[in-house]
Amino acid sequence: MSLPITEEWLKQVGFRWHQLELQPCRHWLLWLGGALDDGTVPAVEDLGIEVSEVSSVASQWHCWLRADYGRRYSRFIHLRHLKEQSELLAIIEGITGETFEPANNLYGAIHTKEAAQRLREQAGRFDRILMREEPHSQIERDDSRGGALPEHQEAFVQHRLENQGLLKEI
Image (cartoon, rainbow, N blue to C red; front, side, top):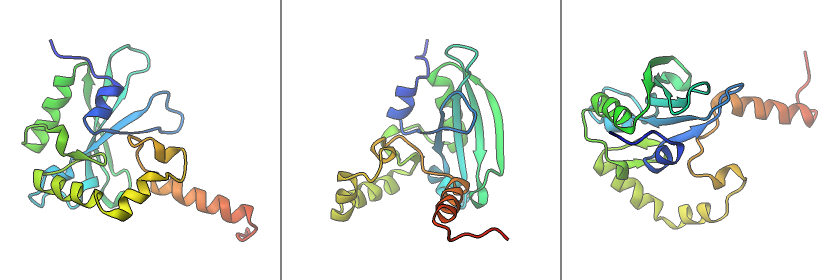
């Protein structure tokens, strides 16, 4: 019997979490585009697997295939419910055609072995080290936290402009 899916395990193998409005549970996302280095997916963050715990059933997880072409939710397809790590790994390996290797999962995305090595080398640059030493906000201290969605960034800028009196209603 395989081990159950947990948030701790998802974080360990490279998933990033984000919270959707009005949702009781975190959603965990792993982008798959970097593993499909054959040109079939335009960018790393265009195709992913997203999971979230079923709030009404203990130890059961929703699993979606997510495609964000153009940086917007274009497809969000529920695949099935999962309970075990091996079920999720089988789905990922079936889509990518590669053996799941957590060491190649960086920044919430699966990468080829070569691409992961390049990213590790870039992370060793002095400017990147300085950025990691002093997080600007509490959110940046959680490295498993996903980035803001474009619509959240736009709403933040609009709110700031309105509060500064720079945005006038027409």
